[in-house]
Image (cartoon, rainbow, N blue to C red; front, side, top):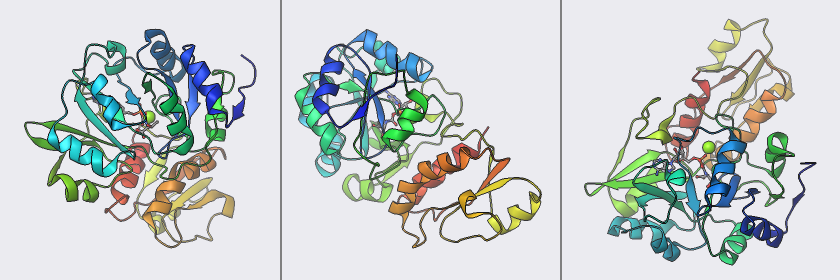
Length: 320
Ligand code: TXA
Ligand code: MG
């Protein structure tokens, strides 16, 4: 394939998806690599383009939660409450799947992940389709998720026939993944919908600790979202002298550091706004990673609201 065209023509994206092709689509969280979720060939192509292991299941996306009854067996009351409050939005629900959902999508698991993205262009696209689209983040497996069409092109240029450009993602961090076990609401992945917001609607939740090698819970691979340069977390003032003489980059929450040239400094939010920090995080990691640094030094943000998901991504980026 030659250069991948980038454009805003959702009808073109719809035509390609109907033909079984895989295209990149914008969402409010991150860009997705979409294919017809009910078409085995399209789903297999997603795995191969992403270089993703087949044991890691995919989220299916549609325009409206009422359509989800076509692909899942039963919807608990807590799921309806969360859907009414937060869909469309940065929330993914794990629900018992119907047999029509291919094994390839769920990696053979009994539940399927469903999400209603809140992005105007992708809403139009999904409304026009009579099937859901499976869409992982549009990055090679293990690398940083894309939050602009250009990020997608940096790695998938020539590998897919179209990138639907919806501008920079407004949330910037993946959806929060929620499921239900024995009447209990469980958070499997921290994300763009805060735990505080979920608890206000569904009551107390349980957060599943992440593990690196549990095939029954593949959403929890630990080393992920990782730049090519090693990333170390800590107190920046203490880390910098330890790496004197190296080519270092810095990810700071609010403060500027004159110790490094400005192009090697990412300030997530000078005002200390966690929404802004979430929007900047992945783009900032990518900007630093393009500089061939010896090491990236980063600090955690406050462990509240979106800060919990930001810190989760920083910790995974630091794991190798
Ligand atoms: O915000 C998002 O969720 C983005 C946009 C494109 O929608 N998608 C996304 O997909 O982040 P992906 O594939 O990069 O991450 C989805 C995670 C994976 O870690 C996967 O293991 C987990 O969801 N997952 C999917 N289906 C699952 C299932 N049936 N049971 C457990 N985990 C599941
Ligand atoms: Mg991903």
